[in-house]
Structures are given as structure tokens and as C-alpha cells.
Length: 238
Image (cartoon, rainbow, N blue to C red):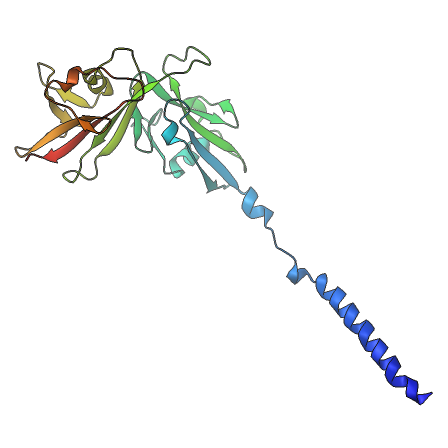
């Protein structure tokens, strides 16, 4: 009878090993940890450039906190600048709009008028900033745009802006410059005097380009196509 004890002990040890292995599989410390709080306690702020400014489309997430309003969320996004009176969006990113377009805001798919921007948000809310025609007409109409880019180059490195507007058939480079509201032309409308109140010094000049090609002296009369990009760049005169 005594000779059977080692075999009995071996069997017990085998069972113990199996039970230990099963127990280890169910240890909480070895289970994947997923924090629902981290994923749920945010809001989304998105820019929808649509057909107006497709390159401007982007989306970011920001932490949610109690008492956060729609307007505060827009400010905290780092994407939005308001007008001095705080009643309208002046620019998003580096893009401003001429009088033919305006910025608008949706909260969870519903348009929110500026006077309702003090609405308090909830976790998981989605805020969308988008572009619409200023006349608000033509639901479903696809608009085309022209884009004016302003660059201070190495002379004024902090001057980098874009201005978008609805494309008007037969419009010229001059039309786009004037409609932007930031370009002052000479009395004969042939030369750029200043851009955003920046006047070139004696050894500087504003260079005008369309789709990265510099225009000649009579370039302001050039007719544009939809999605053409006009660029004004401040450079040192050669």
C-alpha cells in the first residue's frame, strides 16, 4: 500500500497545477483595461469645408467639463477667431470669408444661431463649423469658390491668411482682390498699394500669382476659373 503513495502525490500535484493555471487566466490584473470614462468624457469640434473649402476639413477632440458652453468650446478649439463684438466668427484656422460667404455652426446636426452659442454642452456632443452662402438660398446648390492667399514671406513671416469667396463667372484677379476687403489698390486700380494695411518699403513689393505663376503687369485683368488660387506675397525687390 505504501508504494502507491508517490503516485497519489503526483496526481494531486498535477491537479493543483491545472487548477492554478485556470485561476491565473481569470485574474483581474491580467484582463485588458478599457476606460470608458476617457473615451466618453470628450466633445468633437469639426470643420466641414464641404465644396467651398475641402482642404479645410478637419476634426479634433477636446476634454469635456461641466458648464462648458458652445462658444467656449469654439474658443478652446484653437481654430476659431471671433469678431470684436463676439457675435460672429471672423476666421477659422487661417481662413476668412468675403461677404458672399459666412461661417455657421451646428450642434449634433442642428443649426445654432449666434445668439444661442451660450448653450451648455454635454459629453459626446459634436460641434461642426461649416461654410454657407451669405444669402442662404439654393438649398442643395453646389457653389464654387475662388481663394486669395496672403503671405508676408520672409519679410513679414507672421502674415499668413486666406480669403475665400463664391466664384462669379468672368471674374478677374482684380475682382477677387477688391472683394476680399483687405487689399487697397491704386486710384487707377492697376497696382496693389497695401494688403491688411501692410505697405511695402522702398526695396519691397507685392507679387501677384495665380496658381503659383507670377502675373505680368496687366495680370489684374486675367479672368479666373473656379477653384483658382490668387496669391499675394511680400518680397524684397531684386
